[in-house]
Image (tube, rainbow, N blue to C red; front, side, top):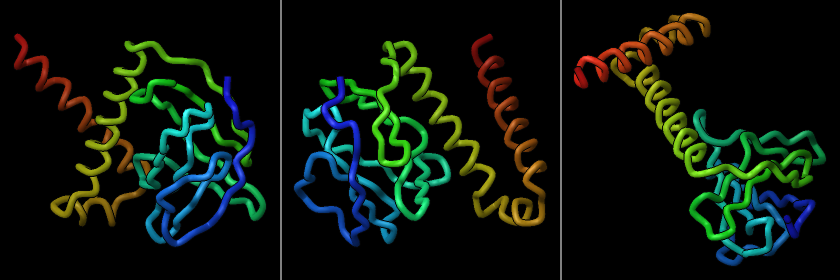
Length: 152
């Protein structure tokens, strides 16, 4: 059960050391948001905005974060979304699902940064979004094939 059903947003330059419960601090300069866990345990929750981490939407009145926030390393293991300042509790994940999510995050980062690396920058800047998506899929397939060959 979550203690905070809403988060008030505050745009700040620097994230304060002490986070007030029920407030999400957003630093656009440092592309990061932080808040005290919505379950009430007071753990710091840091959500960096990057192409492979969280996305922040500000509609002029409210903020939303995507994807969900899963505090898997905290004792509470809370899981929720922030949707237009509302905190929406999500289903808990078991350890197997958490590990699968972590592997998926690792692959997404590898795919993104492999595609956007300086050695491939010419290809990225001259290709269309569909081309980049295709090359990412092929890179993932190639990695899986290499892993299979090593295990045989």
